[in-house]
Length: 496
Image (cartoon, rainbow, N blue to C red; front, side, top):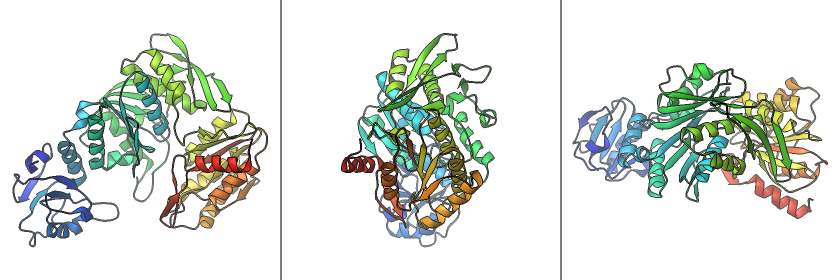
C-alpha cells in the first residue's frame, strides 16, 4: 500500500521523501524494524521511541512517523511524516492498512469500572442465541468462531485491534463486541472507530495513579468519550456518575436501572435467589418501555448480575432481537473467572472471581452474603507495583464483611509478598480490628488451606486472579490456573 493511502484521514506534514513510498506493514516496536515497514514513533509513559528512529532507519524501514522533531541528518533515504499525535495516526493508519474492517460489522463497545467482562459475555451469549456471529475482545482475551487468543490489554493497541477486526470479518463475524477501557480511549487505541452501540455499566474510583489517570474526574471524562463515538448509548441511569459521564454526549440514549423514576428497562427491586451445586443465580421481573412485564432468569448471582443483564437486554432490544434468544442467552451465559463456581463439593461452595479492587470486592461479598452461607471466606492478595490504595481498600472491606480471610499473594511482580500483606493488614485493622484471618504467602498453599478447613455450608470466594492462567513473581510468569488447581486438589484429597 502506498503511504498516501495509508495516511488517509490523518493530518500530517511530509518532512522528507515521497507519499508514493510503498509500505508493507506498520510497526511501533523498534525490534521489528526491517525494509518496507513504517515505524511509528510513540511517546510512552516510560520511554519515547523517537530515540530508536535512527536505528530503525539503519535497518531499512521505509517510513518514519514522528510526533516531534528529530535529527534526520543521518537518514536521507527515509520518508518522514510528522503528525500531531503518533498514537492517533497509528490508529487511523492501522484501520486503513486492514481495510477498515470495523465499518463492515455491527460495533458494540462496553465501558465502566465493574461488569465490562461479564456484560460482554452476556451480550455475546444473547447474540449467538439469535444466530449472530460474534467476535469479542476484552480482559479474558479474544474470542471468535470457536477460537481464543490472549491479549496484553483489555483494549489492545490500535494496530492489534484493527488486525483482530480483520480476522473477525474474514472469519465471517457480523458483530464486533469489545470492552472499551479508559486507557484505550485516552491512548487512542480506538481512535477513528465508531460504535453502533455504546454501553455504560457503572463507575467508581480505579486506575488512578502514576501512568494511569491523574484524578477520578479525568478517569470519568475518558469513559464518557465513548458516548461521543456511538449512535446509541445503553446506560445505567441509577449510577450517580451517569449524568456527569454523559456530558457532551452525541448519541441517542436508552436507559436501564431499578430505582430511577424514569427508565426504559426496569428490574424489580425484589428478586429471587437461585442456588444449587452448579449455579448461583437470580430471577427478576423486567418492565419494558410499553409497560409489558416478564420474568428473567440469569445464571449468575446478585444485584450486579441483574444490572449486567439489563444492559444486555437493552442492547438486544436496540438491535431488534426477539425475547426468546435474549432469555436463552442470559440463562446460559458463563464467564471464566467471574463468579465462576468450581463444583467440587456438596458440603461447601467455592468460586473464583476477578475482583481486585475495593469496589468490586465489596460488591461481590455483599452479593454472596445474600445466599446466607455458614461462613463467608475470602482468599485474596493484591498485585505488586500497583497503588497501595487497593490493598488498604480490599483489606478494609474484607475485614468488615467477610467471616474469615486468607491473606496470600497475587502477582507480586517485584515486591515482597510480606510487604503487600502488611499493607492489606493495615486496611483490615481500619475495617475491623477483630477480623479473623490467617497469612499464607504461597497462593497454592492458601487454596489447599481453604479446602482443607471448609465447613458445612461455607461459601469460599477466591478473588483477584479470576481467569488468569499464570502467577507473576519477580517478573517471571509461571502457569497457575486456579480452577484446575482446585479441581486437582479436590480429586487428590477425595473432597465430597
